Image (cartoon, rainbow, N blue to C red; front, top):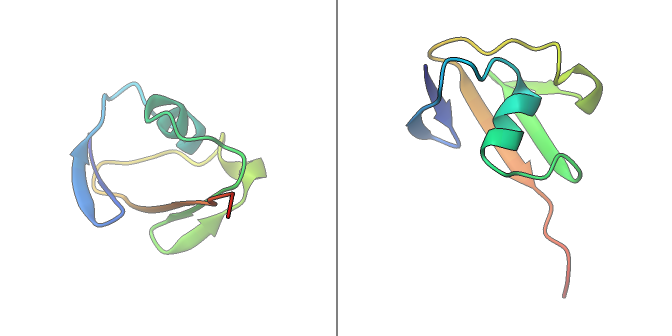
Length: 67
């Protein structure tokens, strides 16, 4: 499946179906991470129920800690 992640086209295995699966696949921490799917914010409570489709656009932002 092809997704646009942070403005970059990426091929993701077809068995990655949810946002949380995608975050795990890309080794992105779920904590402190904001996700928008097709310009709609997805809350952490809904990341297991939002199904990804070929051509979807995601914006993934992770908080940076430290000084």
